[in-house]
Length: 305
Image 1 (cartoon, rainbow, N blue to C red):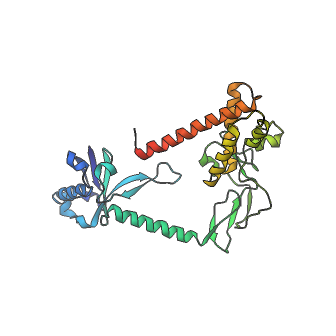
Image 2 (spheres, rainbow, N blue to C red):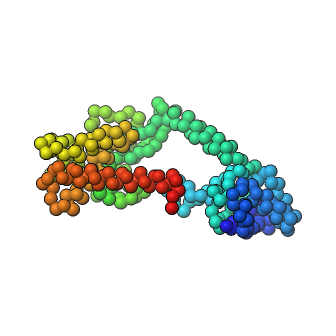
Image 3 (cartoon, rainbow, N blue to C red):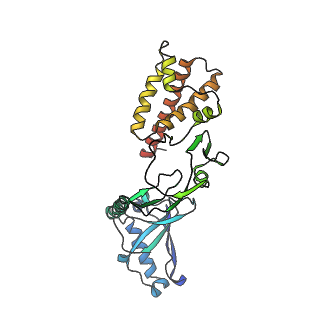
């Protein structure tokens, strides 16, 4: 395992890059050992004669991608002084020597938690605009800023994403959808119109209803039509739909997913006349997808290759 230790602060004449091939015992040791090695090498060279480094006022960092919309954006993330080298640094990774005292993993976590708590506390005093497409926050009780928003809910149909009030402006990924221009302007508000009966978002069923097309059957439809036939699929899905709603998965989203699966089943089998078979096959497909999703989570947690 090799790492590149870089000091790039100040004048270019004081910069230094040290390439180290780590001894086997160092991989399972603390990152502080790398900092000690670099400072010893730096202060013993020509750079140290111009700019002596004090190990007590330095820490190590690596570059990590940010959570911004820019996929290329990176930021320096501090490494804990007691972090295990092989668990915190990749082979041939650039490691930066930065000013500021090192912190242990416990201290870094405490600092991050304090920042999270501070942000949560600040949000308690803010309201979110309820206008569709406006994500502005403002102090509770005002003043209320100007906002741009949409008059109709978003539509998520197959791969297309668009606002129902602007059907001619479609996007096919989330970033594009977020950047679609609004069609209304006004003032932010935190008072929701409960009497409008407007859905949070629309799916394929809603679109077909609007254009007068055939509507795929819902779970309740299958329950009614399959009462005599005894399909076991509908009640299972009904329970799952209710449980997922408690986990924050909206019923509209669940229905949209099931609609897509039913459509695929009908296209695959060439007929949608047998309601019981369609529902039972849809249950199997959804079960397989959920099982694969759980496996993926388990793999990620256990870091299984």
